[in-house]
Length: 347
View 1 (cartoon, helix red, strand yellow):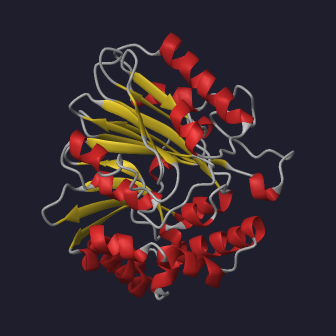
View 2 (cartoon, rainbow, N blue to C red):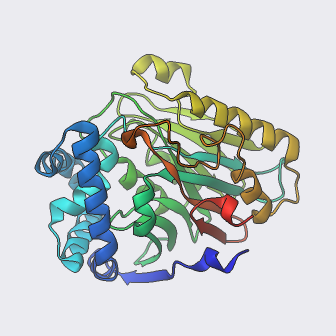
View 3 (cartoon, helix red, strand yellow):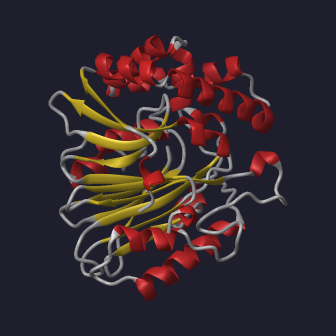
């Protein structure tokens, strides 16, 4: 791998939710302010929503989070203190998917396990606003009486893509729909999964319509289990693997879920899913490694709207997304590999 793959230092944060949050805010003050700037502009330009209006929307989630995950609120309040910003600012970052429901969030993800491969793997490209390249953090969270978490996240956001010391991992795909309830925001759902001790516990955190808006969570375990879970506040669908593999992009696959909400999927999502399926069917064997998975994620078919996504001059600024980071996780051997930027830069 290129040495640039390790250009982002891993920060280990340990202790109570307050301890972890304060250190997060303190070390990432500038990156958090970049995130706030990115989303303030996005809310204004994409949804005609002011920052004060975004704060009001985010505050609607507080009662649910306080009832079910009070430690998350404590950690977010401490991040705000460490970064010298307001609690509502950090809350908005963690609710950003709920504030603009039809934002052009992307991503191509897949999971592999037996009999397809010898090990259990999760991998994905995370496609989003290019400005957020400057806000990416690699965090290791050492918590009291909970699994240790490794994740790649946006500064200020307490749940994202990663795995834990019990071999539970998760990837994320956005789904563009019209559904929202004042429940658990998507990114806090990711954190809840990463705090789970078992595969079954991870699924239970999100499979009963607990999530505030629609998304797809791809969950894997070192127990060689993988599952796709399309979530929303009104319907949740679990999709089981076929011959040890699953893949997902940015459209709903469950017919029942499609009936429960309006969806605003883009055509390239279907193209990327088809390409992922073909690549996995034709090129994956039992002895693959992370370098090979990054080669799949660097695929340029249907460029620039490809699995490895690039700037598309034909799209409006509001619709622009690019691959911001690429990640592969070996859940059996605690392998955590990721690149900042596009995988085609490294393979």
